[in-house]
Length: 514
Image (tube, rainbow, N blue to C red; front, side):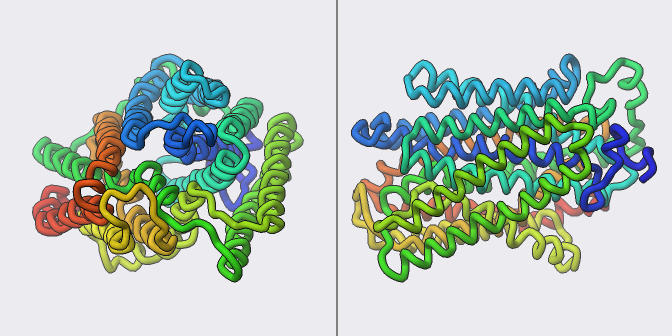
């Protein structure tokens, strides 16, 4: 492979699945970061609302969801500043490493479960995420020449799979250990793999050559891009980005109930105790869901070892050690479940369904978009909002038997499973499309600012999600649980219908961008 095809060192030119080996260093770094983030998020509300007898803090649901609102909201604000710090001071690689270290400290702090260390831990996670999240994605993009857009799109797809693999395993294992063994163990486990991810990245970073180092002023001057697009076209396209950002708030506002009110619904209102054939079916499904992704990811790991071990052995050793530990935990968890007389599905378990459905349906959606049956960005957005609303309609229907003001119930878990399915189908319509259109529509000199606007929209959505979710008890007591979920049905569906109505106007203002 010629050295000018991919950026980075000579080792980076050796390909895995037709991509530079450095991509898979980033794949595993991101996977462990998402493992730690989603593993902790799966436990946060459950820990806060659990009684003192169960090792929690015994908070009211409204209080827990308000803290969840602040945490998930601020996680989307700090990347704006993290990107600037990396550009001006640290460089991408140092920012990723420092962010990972700060997040490791954050997870370790939360394991102590005292108020001081708990809030210190959340603060570290928010700051560390800001340094880590935008900058590792920037390194992915710089591995490829701008002229090869198809290869770059494929790389981000592989990277996205790493994100979902990490989220899947983090929710599954941290959630299980936190609920079944102890909250400290769940929080601590998230930190252990963040630490391993940092070490494997740090000791393999030379594979990227000059990519991700602090850019000097000469490089900056060379990066100035001329944009001859007429001013009125640029203005129209910026308006379209702003409209998309506005409507994405409605999507993530509802979608992010997953870590808040939907987790409470799973914990307190869903029948999670299984017996007989139902218990055996769950054990089989849980085993296949867990072992399948682990085998695939381990296969990718071996591919990386074959290419990089002789040059970056220490990085590979840390990565290999992390997989030995994770396999040990997986086999221990599955063995414990198979030998247990009682089968109770952890409340956090339902969170893995989003990642699982993405892995299953993403290739099908990719083929569907390529068929060009639907080419309009606003229509894809609208479809995502409507599918999301239908997921909540299913939950509202499943909640009809819950008495007004009830604090507990025992409805079938099928409603949560179907809701997560429709939410994921909605995400696959909207999430990849949104970021793609920002990069296509934004004027060259304003790309960073437009992504900043996108992050602000996500901040508003996540903060509003937790805040709205905190009214679950008040709405349930005054009306019903069905009414609560119908709020998240009508608003996204209504927003989707508005987008369909204004689609012709938006398409005209996009001036040919598809």
